[in-house]
Image (cartoon, rainbow, N blue to C red; front, side, top):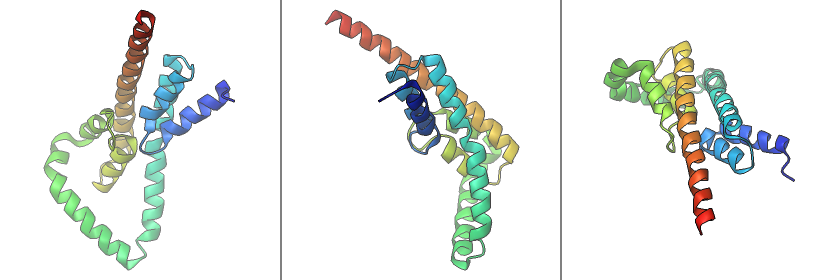
Length: 161
């Protein structure tokens, strides 16, 4: 039985987990009768929670894993390679680049990947959190607009068929 509470919980869950994020949560909510403005608020709120959760997770487990030699060697090589490769882009775009990356509602771009990338590159936690929130709001606006427009177009198509 899909009660409004169950739909809200599923939407929140979909908005928070990697891969789907709000690109899955907002359409799910709208498709199940939640008004677009509540779906937007729900999706953005729970997707924005990803940044602090991811940062805490990464910081905590990273400290534990650094005690293992194989992880430390892998991490040091991986980080050096990533930082050297992305140094110019990070210098040029900084936290604004993170916001833009998160704002694009494509697979593998979003709050999880943006936070991970910023953490790996050593960007400021505060600026990263702000960038992710801005990016999530932009992405939520895009997804909500596409879903709402799609519902209206589909509704018009059904009425004319």
